[in-house]
Length: 324
Length: 258
Image (tube, rainbow over the protein chains, first blue to last red):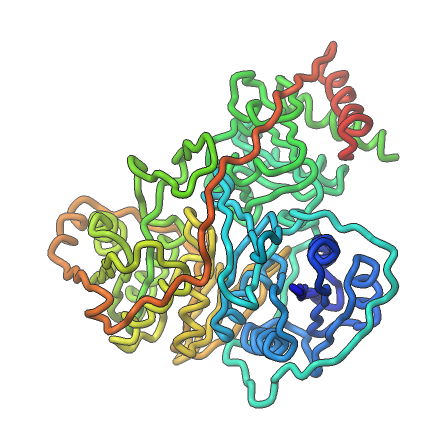
């Protein structure tokens, strides 16, 4: 009976949607193989979490005793490890977010268990978990099998679809998060948000990126305008970041962020292999480029061969017309 | 100040993976190998600290003897003082936890104030070893840093999070994993590459370090190529506006993504 625990990440009380995506996938596996799906909550409104988790298929939500306001690896890692020792889940899913990528290995080291990063596929066959993850930033995939129970797996946002199954609010139980005697050495003094509350690249449903074809930093506004019209995150190729036209946090590619949105719009991006690695798992790819031979068209589903300075503003207008 | 920088040699980001069908192993012969780009930020940060405050930098890697050139050019020639290569056939197929154990054994041979890693290696994209090492050594860590300021026995680091950053205070010794944006790594000069050949480079085995690598916690079943993508449908129109309107319509009505 493989029970799956899903870490329900929250910051400032806002839950990450990757939690509901993971619970939905875990419920599918539980329905096929037996076992329960448990939410694990550190801080945040447990009634709200239980309602959402239950709606997506969780059987129970375990809420930690104690206060969890800002993230630190010591307190959170101790809490997740304490939960695993007490409840003995077979598998623990965390989002492959800035928090989950840090929490997973921290808790795994405390438990001496396997930790697998950045997974995009999860199956249970022949009594073992099969975890699929991209390597070389998506140039190929590897299937790995954890040899420990529990095993911690970080799931990439948007890898699974959140599906409400009409479940009632999950029952809430509290657990001892093992915080007595834990005084973290590394302490978050302040959390600074970026201006304007933009949609974050790795979690966005739609990403609009600009490449060398935008010709200068002043033209990145055109990319941001299209992104704004689509409620999308704005990305960039390495060339644009290395030229200093936009901040590195926008970079998509093997040495930047890996994204897998429903729609990726590449504007003036030729499609160097290191860029393709970071976005080729997107569900639908659109390329706008004046060079019909650009490699980006080899991975694109739809393309316009044309001058992005003419096409992009018109596309922004057309999108606004549809959305209004 | 004593600084360790843990680095890895990886295939260049322009590398093509030619995998036609699922395979138990990935053939990596013929790949051009370079210093992991994220490790270059860790090396550069260590060198800047040494320039500002003095100290000694040790670059440590796990890998075959062929990593020597990379260590010489990208670590020693830009300011690291010595290098340790952990080279042992026992480490073939080692997973993150085993690599972390072996690095811990090497790190315990000295008293480092600061241990730096890149956020992840661009081959396996795992991003765990630095954090595992911190936990196993009982040291605090700050991952994904984009800014670092050192105080007296303390540090303040900016940690990248979705749409913002955390400003973290932490005492030394500590483990940090370095993200793009932290600094702009310098290139080695030719004279410094020549001089780097004189710097000590030690090759050690697990037995030398007194460590037995543990059995892997994760088993690799197979590698497979990414799913093939369909062909591109080119959208045209009388002018840019017409093509853009048609694209928006297709995305809305057919692909249903907007």
